[in-house]
Length: 184
Image (cartoon, rainbow, N blue to C red; front, side):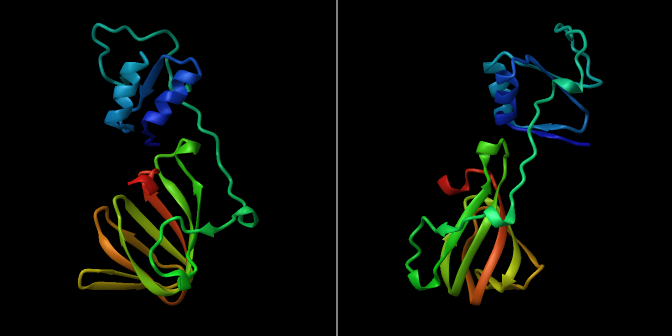
């Protein structure tokens, strides 16, 4: 199975005292992760490639991969908080919560968002996928409008200037990349 390695994964390796990472031919690693590995003196090798002047240490195998624990988010433990950004529409009663973040070692963020009738402008400096749980989610971008109903999925690419809205109410589950979407 293909794995994705971020800078957070490399830092986790270093914290565990590991100094080697063996990638399978299909694994992917970010440029930032390579930089962090170099800074932390962690050697990275890919299966099937010649190590050249750098001999592989004995017993180097996939056990050297960083271990990230599973994260369970219990539905009854999700607490929505008021949206931290002022969109000028208090009557929409916008609430949000991130349930998966970079603090969990994830390159993605995920969470829930709700709002009432209305719409507000938003610029995405990140990629986002929205899964409609309840109500209707309307997304307008330029001359295009899509209306998502429960069970529908909407992809919004990075750099989009949109209007988020609903004719009544919307509850969505979102996934954003990168995980620090709020600071972008």
